[in-house]
Length: 303
Image (tube, rainbow, N blue to C red; front, side, top):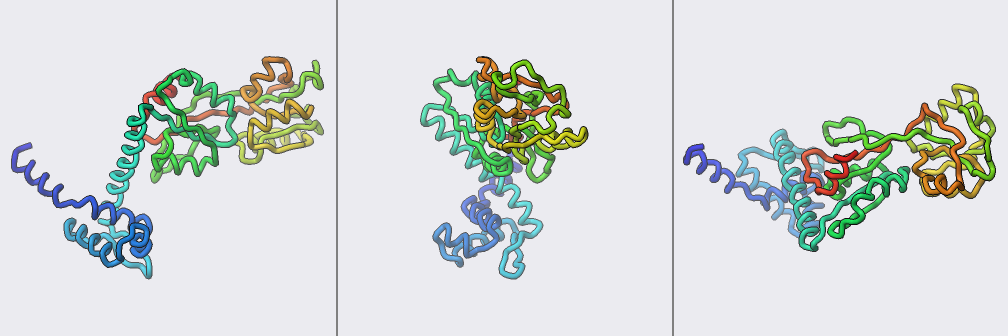
């Protein structure tokens, strides 16, 4: 690149006021000057003037008015796309710097509420001995967790279902593991009895994952296909609660063995049968082209 081209690019960049760009970005997200003006404690006229200055620098209008709402022009949409990335990266930078200043690296993990806590702990176990790592763990609905992932508030989301392709929200979904769904019951109650297939579950008391769980619809369809109607005693989203009910109720339960790994190990519970047609899958969902803590890279690469 010659000296004249470098001067031209530097001159063009110096004319872009990032303060004005930030105001534009806020208004584009909200769609109303008055709301943003109130949020940032400036007058609506001052805010409007600063956006006009940005439009003067760019040489084209960024908004057109549709009723009481501001809509982006084609140029506005282009500028907004760049602004979104610029200020998202700024948010990520501050979060990372905060962790470094405190002398720790941070790994922020979200998990769907239907995911086994035992599986999560097993997955995280290699990191538990690292004194310089702080873990942030939270659970919720998949949609909300993905929103937080996109907003740089989480580094990874653990889920038991894959996310559909969405060009407006590109995400990377990696399969970590899968496990056959088992029918588990009390060793004392079930002794040497076994379930050979879904037909044997007819009229049997059982606790099931709730309707939101990835395999529930598949289980219902499997039973219907052989005319079996289990006696459903509980529907439970939380795997930890399902584990407790299985241990204390005498009912059977449908779950992956990892949920009750300790009870199976000590003989309190037993696998009464397996439904090989049903598998729970475990995924790590990340945002592509995003900084990833080294600890997360190591975890994902070993699975």
